[in-house]
Image 1 (spheres, rainbow, N blue to C red):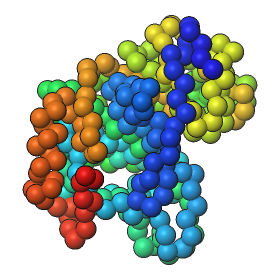
Image 2: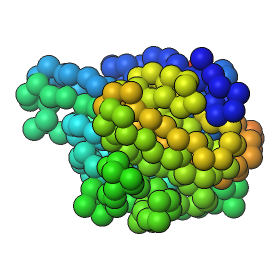
Image 3: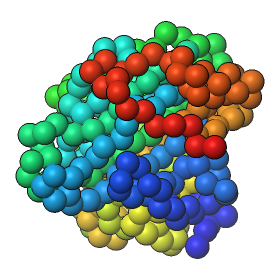
Image 4: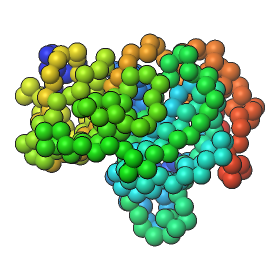
Amino acid sequence: MSNCQTIELLIEPHDADLGGFSVRRALPTRQRRMVRPWIFFDHMGPTDFPAGEGINVRPHPHINLATVTYLFEGEILHRDSVDSYQAIHPGDVNLMVAGSGITHSERERPEVTETPHHLNGLQLWLALPEADEETDPAFYHYPGTEIPHIEVEGVTTCVIMGSTYGTTSPVKVFADTLYVEAHLRAGQSIKVPAAEERAVYVAEGELNTDDTRIPEHAMAVFTDAPDIELTATRDSRIAIVGGQHLGHRHIEWNFVSSRRERIRQAKADWKAQNFPKVAGDEEEFIPFPE
């Protein structure tokens, strides 16, 4: 199912448990660890929760990376150890910079869980350049009204991070970063922006490129071929990601770093509960999985 000129690899995501519900994980996989600078790509949902249930991810730590959360539907409540308390809604962008170390939880407000509700969205991890890995932890929230929405040859497109299609997102970046969402009607096409590494994830629908089918819930990693064009064979919602090659990264559990010894230190710190606590969510935590 691959094309030697355009598609280097087609990834069929595996299911992963995340706080009592299953997500589709496209990165990392055995075939591909990163589409640099992205090292983690989860599709949460689409999931229907009955009243009384929902996302309930207890406090857990990160180092040397940034997390990016973007919802299509539903709501998630983010809290962290730099005193952030932020509900993310569809179209918003939550950027959490772990840097030297942060703890956060992802839950839902009682107003949401008291009735049946729906969730659908993406969460990605972004490797930081080595010079920024130990930056101070920080949290940035960008309302959907601040994220550029443009028409690219008739295709409704959202430039979530980076600069492309003549538009620059206000979301903070640390290196050349590509993150675009597009809605294509059946028969519409869009060109993949240039970047050192690139991939597309089909959240909904189906694509075709060079007579190669990219099915729903699959990620296609591209070669460096120029002028790659994607055509929707039915109405589709896609995410195009990629950017600068930052070099190798080690990953273990929630820890990412260019230095293996830094991950060893983070593991010891979490086991000893030396990480800062989540403001307002101090009682629970996820133990390190031995």
